[in-house]
Every structure is written in structure tokens, then in C-alpha cells.
Image (cartoon, rainbow, N blue to C red):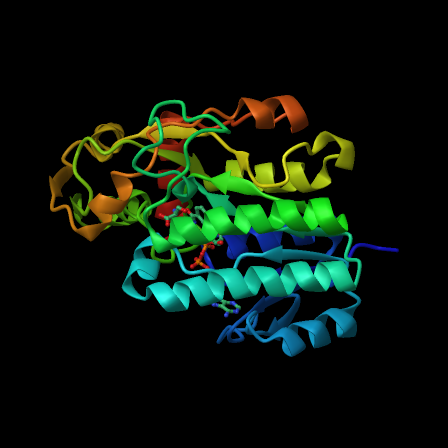
Length: 313
Ligand code: NAD
Ligand code: SER
């Protein structure tokens, strides 16, 4: 049987790029994009409006298209989740459990669900954070991702659901806007650098966090999902490493392209979230099990962001 893929949360920062990449791999007619609302300007390819917390609606779409794989991207991210913790818990957990249950009942081939560096917490060692270490997240987003990891592991062990996951770092891309996370500054800064040569950052200058350029993140997702089943040893979620930098480091790199660029700092509530997360990630399990290797560093990411954003803006 041919793969038929449903991407839930397709209009977001990752979905916008992942749908494109999946359509390039599987063919446009094999990938159904879905989000709460249809886009105002219809894009190419199939789209279904879906609220992932609506189990019946999800089942209908799976049956209608003969779906064999689901990529579940719908969630509230760290900063937005703190504003509405109970709703964040409902969306992040109910969405995942609906998809896992359906995968079990309908014997779906594969499920992809992203976790995050937010599974770590204030007591986690911050540098080169290991795959297995103290995990005591203090944000509702982190708690939902930590619980989600346990559920993925459970559905794989108990029911054989082929669910795969990555703990994404903060993602940076030029094609789509970020959706309410603590790492969003690293996208906004590029837009403001081009518009006004200045940026007021909501994190302090020395707040180093694990980050990744979107092309690496999309490639990692496809490589993980395309890997032979026997190579996937971790069914909670894999650490995924890319680049580690602070706002000050990024501003210095931007200044190489825009010499007059000015940055000021006004930390807000997102600083408290960032302070609980790792500075850098040990992704040796991903490298060993399914051959992960990031391609972009701070310099090459910054160059590529400016080339593409200039064209886009
Ligand atoms: P985003 O906020 O940009 O996109 C999420 C999409 O889900 C939105 O288009 C939204 O309309 C949709 N959505 C919300 N509620 C929905 C519902 N009930 N039913 C269907 N769709 C719904 O998020 P993103 O940055 O693309 O992140 C996608 C996933 O990756 C999330 O699980 C997030 O936690 C994870 N992640 C993202 C990052 C990052 O830096 N972007 C890092 C780590 C993990
Ligand atoms: N980029 C995400 C956030 O800041 C990390 O999961 O919420």
C-alpha cells in the first residue's frame, strides 16, 4: 500500500515547511495538510480543516483518505502555554492521545510527534545535556512534552505503535513565523535587523539555548521517519543537537552582515522559562542510531537567513 500522510497543524512554523518536504518526497496527492482553518489563499495540494481534539472528525479524515501515517504538530508552545495552562494541557495531551489511540485501533504504519528541549528543567545539567538525565520541567509546555514522551513509549511497548519523536531545539527559518515560543527571538531578530537595523530582545544577552536552522530540522524529521524500524531504539524522544548560541552571539554574527545593527535587552517572563532549559544538547544517540548530523552552524545559518529573507521581504 502507498503511504498516505496526514499533517496536523500544517499551517504553523514547522508544518509550512514539512508539508512542502513531504510532498516533494511522497508526491503532492499523498500528503493531506490540516489545521483549524483552511488558509485564506488556498495552497497547492489537499487540505482538511480539523481540530485534533475532535476524535470523530479525525477518524473521518483518516478513513476518507486512507491515511497510513500521521505527523502531529498541533500544540501550544512554551510562552503561549504559560498564559493558559489548562487549555495547553488539554490540547497538547488530548491531541496526542487521540492520534495514538487511532494509530492503535486502525493500525497506522507510523506516527511522528515532536517533543522539545522543554522536557528538561531547572535541575538538569545545562551543558551538553544527556539523553537520559534529570527531567523535572517547570513549565506546562515542558510537563506536557514529558508526559507525551511517556505516552509514546507506552503505546510502542504495549501496542507496537511505530511512533517516532525528536526533542527539537528552538527552530529558526525564513519561510514561516514562529508560534509563541521562548526561542522566537532568534527569528524576529532577523526581520527587525533588515527592517530597522535594531532589535529589542526579550531574553538577556547571555541566555544561550540549543537552536537549529529549519532545513536541518526538516531533514532530521524525514531521516528519522525514513530510518529502518530496527534502528529506532528510543521511543520516548531523541535529543537533537544543532547550534548553541546566546542573543549576544547572534547579534555579533548579524553585525557582520549589517554593521550598524543595534540590540537592546528587556527580558520578560520568557527569561524565566529559558533559564530552566539546557544551553547545549548531547545528541550522540541520534547520531549512533539513525545517523544524524547537522549541517548548519551559526555563520552559515545567518548567511542563508539573510539571503532568503531579503528576497522574501
Ligand atoms: P506553531 O504554533 O507554529 O503551529 C502549530 C499549528 O497547530 C498552528 O498552525 C495552529 O493553528 C495549529 N493548531 C492549534 N490547535 C489546533 C487544533 N486543536 N487542531 C489542529 N491544529 C491546531 O507550532 P510549530 O512551531 O510549528 O510547532 C509544531 C510542533 O513542534 C509542536 O508540537 C511544538 O511543540 C514542537 N516544537 C516546536 C519547536 C519550534 O521551535 N518551533 C521546538 C520544539 C518543539
Ligand atoms: N521553540 C520552542 C519554544 O520556545 C521549544 O520547544 O517553545
